[in-house]
Length: 290
Image 1 (tube, rainbow, N blue to C red):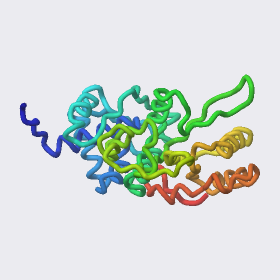
Image 2: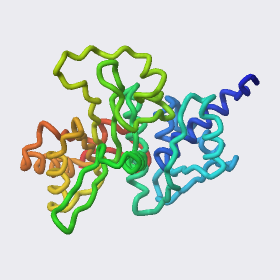
Image 3: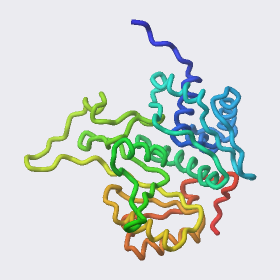
Image 4: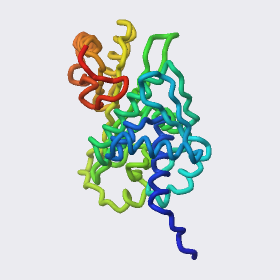
């Protein structure tokens, strides 16, 4: 049996960065800086180095905002190749992320919030909308999205990200939660899970259920009253998420959310925080109450 090929630490770190970017779709220097606990200048240098190597593409679509970086086919290949050495799992089944002016600002904010949540909740699995859509598609059921609308106008609404709690011996791993670039795999069939002793269950008692996720929404603009109330009612009815956490960029958006939550009587299920509570100031996001 041949010895495992040595992979330099720098390459492993770069491959993990590419896998993380693939999962989110696009990242910024500020998001990578938050994730790797370095300055935005150093993080930007690492991203630009990957651009020069043909592993990432750089998109500067909004004046006064940070650039977005997406993974190229060459970068995906490198991330897949070194996932064993890098102790992460490449996020399969995701399409190519497309950057447009309409969604760029929201993508910038979501990248930063995701990185901050990963640091705030170590051991949890934080995923974006792309990975949630894949997980629900492969699992054939809703995990953290909701259905909105009546007969003839039903639609699915996906949160911007989801926080999955870690599994414990008493609570088996949540379905469809493979490892990410920051969190080891936790599934009922993984070696780690199978080696954990199962908590005793009294006769007649149902087995322990997987921990429920928290849905996260990043609100940068005011929604129409009808759309806002439809979303809030759907979250208030949802019984397969533990809670919904909104981050509102402005005080006006925050007040609109709080008024709607009070109207649907969902104060226990839905929490609103200012975006400045999780996201550090960065180009295009001064995060001053307005």
